[in-house]
Image 1: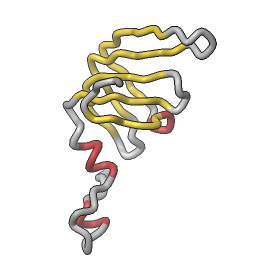
Image 2: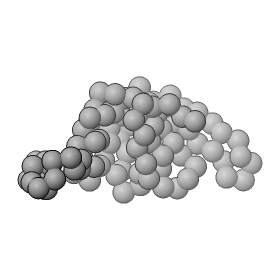
Image 3: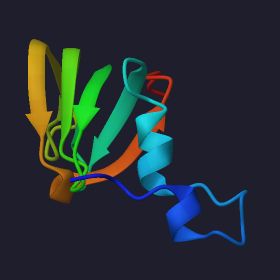
Length: 97
């Protein structure tokens, strides 16, 4: 299934950038992904995504913060598939702040 382009979505406004186009610019780049649950975050190289923004990351690091103690654990992952329904934010650049 092809993703919409800015020409087909808004022919009268060439400066309009669709979310899928922005995410497409991040493919093969480092990203920081914050999940909706609020205590899991991921950094890694975005290798691909689909129309539901399910994302595949390689060389990923999972950051998991325990909500009771506040202690954060990290886990190195070779690759991971993240469900787009659970993604809150994708930050290009991959640097956690």
